[in-house]
Image 1 (cartoon, rainbow, N blue to C red):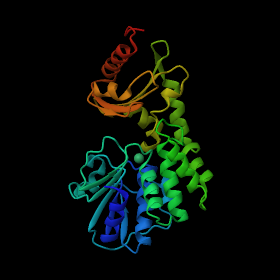
Image 2 (spheres, helix red, strand yellow; image 1 turned 90 degrees about the horizontal axis):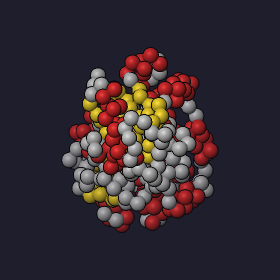
Image 3 (spheres, rainbow, N blue to C red; image 1 turned 45 degrees about the horizontal axis):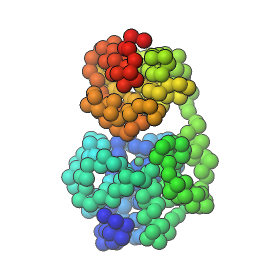
Image 4 (spheres, protein in one colour; image 1 turned 30 degrees about the vertical axis):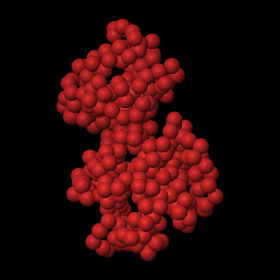
Length: 318
Ligand SMILES: [Mn+2]
């Protein structure tokens, strides 16, 4: 669907339930709360929901937000490529989603209508462009939400998905009254003492292979327990191995169950992370992908390193 059709859809429907994806990030929440605020401004009833509680880390996005009391009639999903990402509490809406606003090329087109822009850096960028194109006023709080989604999905305007459009939207949004310095510091600079300890532990345990072109960190449930840190402190570690100069393939192996490990792969231009993870039944983006592998940690590591050696064209026992 296009912008005009979406506008028409919003005008002719009411009692909106906005679904955000599980393990929510700044984009799904930013888009969800901006859209909710926009719809309420249009005198519609609207709520935002997630399978979990909204993370405290993003509390500035739902500051002043309250749930309205109504029976939902219109279901909208934001930043959701696949109904599997709804999470257990929202799975009841699978097959019932009226509109999906998304920017993932992998979108499964599960909604009755989809506004998909796979070139967009963030779902928030699509909503921003929609509001500007349709002359819908943007409030300061909506601007903060939209900015947050664009900033977080582009890694603070550093990732390959950063586009001139993303910068232009951010520049326009910065003119509103919200504190982007505070948002960026909170999203990108600040970490808890526990998190810093976890990162120290991870970097201390990092292993290097193939002339230091591949780095690997392994995280077992035992290590997580021993650290005493909350499980959430172990999210988003996947970018660490690739921060080392010379590394082209950074791998994080995290234990899920006794003999199940989750692999997160980050790569530079020299390697296709998505193709690599597809070998193990996973997938993702070209520079960031993941998969699950069964076996003991040693077995999993051996399988992974042999696959990396093939891609890099080196012998597996370096
Ligand atoms: Mn997104």
